[in-house]
Image 1: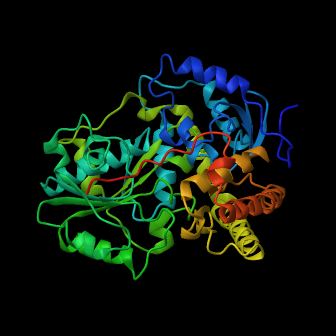
Image 2: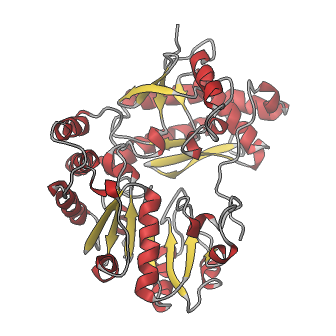
Image 3: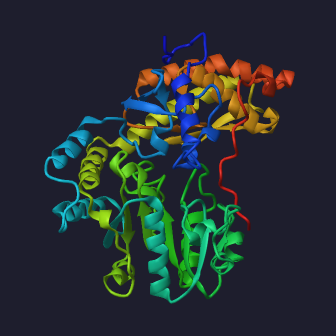
Length: 437
């Protein structure tokens, strides 16, 4: 029998997942289109590789095993899988058409809706992916300022201007790499060190897991303005989750441009660039940013349905409430088992993170062991609590029950120093975020 979210006696049978993976390896290099979904991020031989379907906060793999999902499509599923309001909007639009020879009125309707909820929005551009939006923002900033350099903090996609700053910079000319420098979150001096008169823009994720300290975001905004550089917020994670209007609303900081994707359409591919009209309107003439699928109607319909649902149901407050229960419950269990030097749950309530502390030893090994044991218990676990509107009290209660079952295993592995020996597969690969500078 396939596993379910329960204290299963056996690890899930993933025979079909493995068969598909072995076939895919022959023609796909790499097999995953998104690094966070790749087999290296999951416990080999234990974790599923391919999912078949989802409903609400649960997913089923191709072998029929059921899991509570805390990855939620790596962020886009703010409402949950197969959410009726959104799916019905997509189905209704599908009866009319997907992509047309002229513009769809949905383009204006979606843009007007985004403008109504995102602060400081004078103009809106639509595209398909998060790095589309960030790259639009960078190009428009360069056009507006007449400058070349970019200063960034965080992860901003695969395009040349950003990925050249990382260790995976092959294929990016050195001349392009030299135009982008990085700074560190909550380290204002690191920003000062890379700002100069040729910096067109400062782009950052306004939060990932760490909260800004000492008015960090306000200071970034001030320094960018004083330097004549555009301030760009990459709101892929903060938008429509932290608050409906994202980090600008939540932290009360104004950006010149803000970029959104992920949670805005509950899984459909779309992105938005918002902000100053005098910057974005360069796209009317001297800046060329166009794509055939920017007006694809199914994603626009999904956006309108999703954003209205997020607004009408006050979904960000729900995400925070449910995530807070998980975070507090985990930390209470940590205290109960005397594991404060080993692990904790941090981050913002809507997107918590399980941390392994110096007392845990090799954090990646411990994360692998935790994932292995949580997957056995029917939880698709990647170290995060990416909350959705479909996560229920029952989901949270069972997840805490699973943590209560697993944490003593983690503690004993630390005490015995044999965590690696307990692994059924290979240690997880390091998540790619490393920069050269």
